Image (cartoon, rainbow, N blue to C red; front, side, top):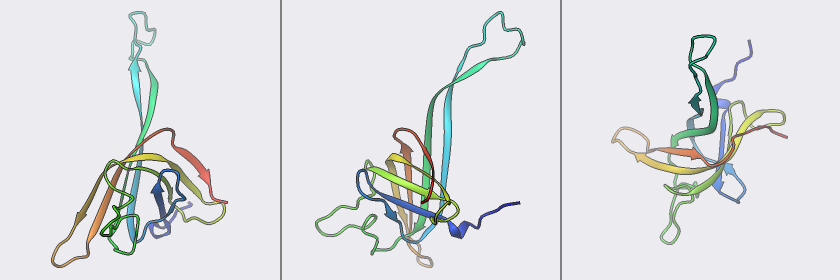
Length: 143
């Protein structure tokens, strides 16, 4: 059985049209693909069961990690907003098994729907990025 360690994963993001770059201190990511369906069951359905067809495809994702003020994509300065913020158009690449030659990954464009940051007195500052796909999800192989 082939298996991958979670610690091999890599997440790359940036503003749409910019070269994607690794986010720092990522602890997890998820990617969910969905499709809308239409019920096309008719009164003369031979199987006496519902019949459906797939229509629009979509995807959503979440990235979590430890916030690092040296990651310019998530951080802000006095005069510059962060690149990855709610409403931002981004490009991304999600690598479940690493980002070396022949590793599989997912890519696409998305809109950031939310960015949250959390802090407790006895823990590290964390962030969560949620995004919705904007166009097709790519299935690629690193070169």
